[in-house]
Image 1 (cartoon, rainbow, N blue to C red):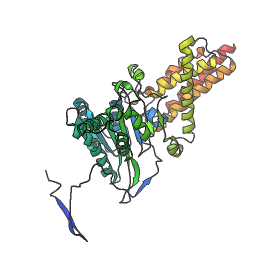
Image 2: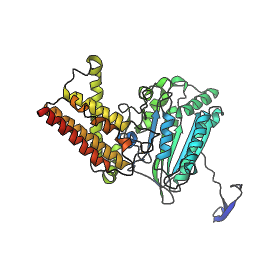
Image 3: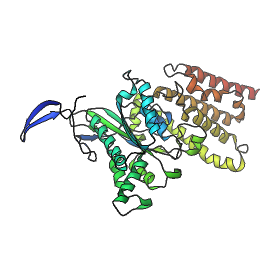
Image 4: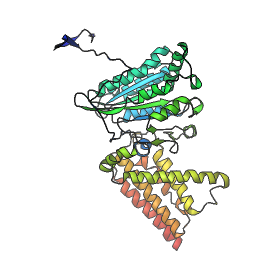
Length: 423
């Protein structure tokens, strides 16, 4: 193997003398690489995961956090994003994680075929393996090494997605090094400079015009592992201050086998307004409006569930029962996704839009029954709600024509209920 430091490409004559250009580049990892201009974030990072692409979008060049307790699916979500997002280069940092997780990444990514190039996904992946048995100083450096390599590829004009799993282990390394240096500890023993270190890391994300005139971006997705799933601990709280996209994982959803286990009430995205024009031009003019309707139904369901816990669902008026039923269809048919199903592991935006249209048609017809005074419980006998939930499996990603037949079937089912009730 050739040594990049010895392989001389050419010589450049400068005012200081002749400089030899080699295949190796040196750069201090804690120093941000320069760029000509930081550009506005206007394009989403499409992941094929419906709850991320539609409900809580991450802009290309933005920063997101995935906090969650043990077993909630942080690593699995990052694997899914790394497999399917529309980035050119993936930088995956295993910071203080178990060695078998790094082995899993190597095995899976070498078997998966990249749809863009037709080559193994590992060919466009940079893997930084810093397992939990490695020195603590190496753990602290691994995060900086990863983000510097991401900036290196960004300067070439590539769009890079960086997965940091997990920043909590990195913060623990900072705490341990700080303790050995006998620095004054702050909250929970972490150093007082923890917030500034976290901000320096996430601020290195961005959509840039490089010095060579190319456009490139670095999108950061950092996993946070709060002990006991306590989101009030310092690492999670300080991370929330510096990211605009927050995918909060819920232990109860994970234990109920609802994946991705992202809680739609505790999560948020500050990029929705930035990328709304892109969705309007490339997906549907009213896409963000339809997304808002879904969120309103889910939020109304949350408030109704407090009443249901106290007195049960039977005493609710039909309008509220209809809301609960539509919210159930949204949760099971849209937010829940199967990473092991060939058509559900990655869902293109066109199909996501059609799924939303179908669910909102179901919602409108349910409201029509309520206005006519017809019990919404009669809809359950038609079985149409289960067909809507199964559309994610039954309708392939490359042929969306069955959505027309499904919408016709929904109208026919409701028309039948109305006729039977009137007769």
